[in-house]
Structure formats: structure tokens, C-alpha cells
Image 1 (tube, one colour):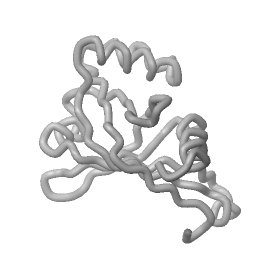
Image 2 (cartoon, one colour; image 1 turned 30 degrees about the horizontal axis):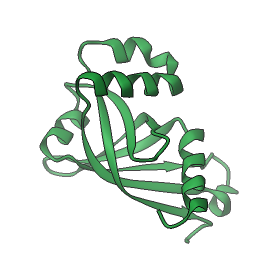
Image 3 (cartoon, helix red, strand yellow; image 1 turned 180 degrees about the vertical axis):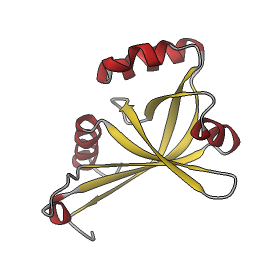
Length: 141
């Protein structure tokens, strides 16, 4: 991260938003989907839950490089000048064993309504190790 202010701005956006657009590599095309996510305090990981027999899970198993977009837009025209977006580039994999429990607990602090989903035996907790953050604010900057 370039500065503490930039890190603080990114943290504020990630903590305030519930959903992000996850992009994975598909067999023929990129594939994007909405996911409920959580970030770790140090911004090292982005966490989300998914069922194992989904396209996004299979894409990650085949090609773990992913990106995620998180933004502050709403449905209003003023967003063109005020919206902010954070792109996260990283490598995704399923969290295993004690790490799974730690990340699942963290994820449920932000998304407690996903408890039964996360406890499903077919649910994987995916961690994205963030390699790069790209912040965009003020339209076209």
C-alpha cells in the first residue's frame, strides 16, 4: 500500500459494502458473480463462502487468479462523480481445517444471516490472498 490514508480509504469501503463482483477465469470466457465478502483487518485476505459445485468454485480450482470489484455506487446519477471503486487482484483457494474455522467465524461476524449456508457441509470458505489493490475515485480517475 502506498500510504496509510489509501489503506484507510480501502478499509472503509470494504467494511461498508456487503457485496462484491468476483471475476474468475472460465473455460471459454471470464465469469463474474456477486458474492458476500469480508476482508481481514490487515487487508491480506478477502473471504467469501460458496457451494463446491458452483461455476465459480470450479473456475477457482482450475485457475486461482481472480479479481474482485467493490464499489460505493447506488442507483443515482450523482454516483458518476462521487462513487469509489476498489479492485482486488489476487489468488483464491479454499481455506482448510483451523483456517477455515477462523475465516468462517470472521465472515459470519459481517454476515450472520449466512450461518446455515456456511455450516452446510458442501460450503467452501474461499480466501483470496490479495496481491494488489487498485482504487478509483472521482469519475474517470
